[in-house]
Image (tube, one colour):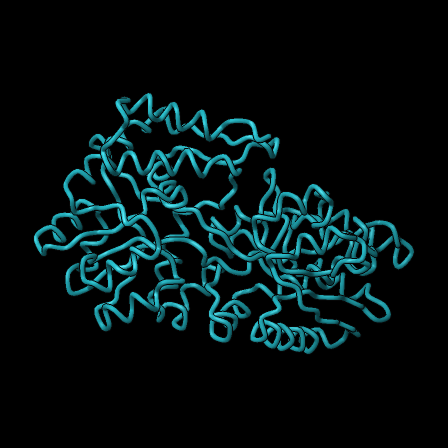
Length: 434
């Protein structure tokens, strides 16, 4: 798929409108071939102009966007802006409603009949790529997609080292909520400092050690892995090697002090904050309104803190998920579908999406805008996303990891040593799925 822009220009010049089959399912005159190039380059003005110059007749495109009313309204507004920006081209763009959570199932029913441009949840990308339902994003027409977005969001849009989608949001992760009357902004950078401060104030810090989603952040912070292998069936996990035993011991040591505690679930996290037991808790944006109600003007949010294991300092990581926009390689107008996908996910569009729908941006400049930074939650998510990885894990991960987290936080290892406990957890996590 990677072709130099020079070759593209030559093909367009020599073939004019006769190359109906040149692209990956697209009309070369409408950009099927112009989608190639160097993925590290910025937007290619030459390729865009060639696309405009070679376009004849009406360009028909179908877009599927979230069925949320506000998202539909904004997408239509953006489509209207796109048509106005490229007014020399006659567009016929139809907007349809499709939840990101169900997009894969609908697209794979008949890829050739699916929308030219569609939004989907990032955990669907592997199956969509395998089914040939996503056009590789090997260059940008108007901007460098990889450079413009947070690395975690780019990773979420990447399969086997190739970018297959345009990041649109990056806001589903966990981060730190804290009471600013107890902690300063500097305090919450370090878990060790937080424990000292909370202990002196007679407060506790809640963390769901019995939830594998949260526990992941400790081991990933020390550079250890937990992800679904390339066979799409078996997990890869090395928590029992390298710094794994040090991390496990650190969790036990932290919890043994009685300030950092296992908050067991969402309900107990919220209750602990409302009752004044917790001065800080690790959780997600869905419970932010309740934390804000409890702490009022003292509500604070930040990226996860650093922690210490065997004398080494690590930044706690997290899983995260985001929404992506993909282009159907079977589109009759692949090039224009890609330009539209860029427009729907660029900096300006993501700022508008935050303002009108409340979704956190993946675009780095959009995340740094005044409007976004005014939100403590989105600012914290943006800071944490730098230390987050896409959630790509098989079902056998959850129970063994949760059991491990509960054991470490309670200090009850069932008569096993840490290495044996980790070996047992990894064996369960990496068992072949039946």
